[in-house]
Length: 381
Ligand SMILES: [Zn+2]
Image (cartoon, rainbow, N blue to C red; front, top):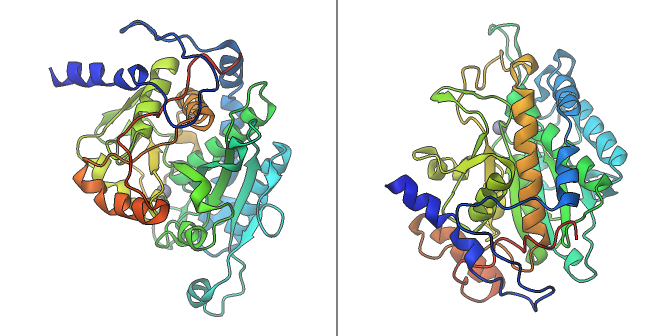
């Protein structure tokens, strides 16, 4: 019964008219309830360009022993940053850092963390400009942490390769950037792709970003953080063609993801126990605390080698990862092309701190959830 109710509820956003900005196109025809929406051809072509081989190659490199588990700070982490910057360049993203694609992290908190260790910590940031003259000045963040746990003597081979956590998220971010960059269809808002250092060190990189944003926070409409997308052998059971979003009921973004899931054959759902509990446990929290709707998307929350030395790239389900990436691409398109912006749901008790931050930032009460999806008739027109 509950399942049926949730299913019906998931169609609601389609029935609510987009309201925020002046209409840019005629209201799209609504699909009949229960019938799948068709993907517009040009958007479908972009989604179909997602490559399992490239995803596998990125993960194999980032999680290779030579990067020594990408501890913050370390040589391996620096090599990973160089690799990501190279991939952003290849995808023809605009450099969005202070040093090309690098956002050099330097403030008292970072200096205290580094003590006298001779490393330069950096986030890696690349921008894909939106297609609309006005809306391109607003930004959707697509992020993933590129650090890992490094090397610990005495456990396995000692190298914590972090293939699923989180080479899988970084590889997806790179692939999504590449696919959007070469696609014939481009969302109206801009996408800012960021790889964060230091997630495993109390989210040092994303918190640095929150203190030193590269684009105005007031123009940042939301954040999609990618974590642990590659393993389907969740400790609770196999997870094929499915994905979870933390803080599922907190904002309207989940309804857009559900819709993207229906368009691409992925079941995007709320994990009953972990959706809310895991909301503060990844980089999305740094932006949520500033009032910006921000979630983490994952396939498996807990898997056998989680934070262990056996989190190797050959255990990634690459074909499933490709399918999940298609869904993410559809969701990013819908979010970044929409006239409306994601909203916090004021009725959610657990979202109250973030709603308070939103009100403080934007100076008016959060509106009731609406305008989350964008119009299905626009893409590919
Ligand atoms: Zn992680």
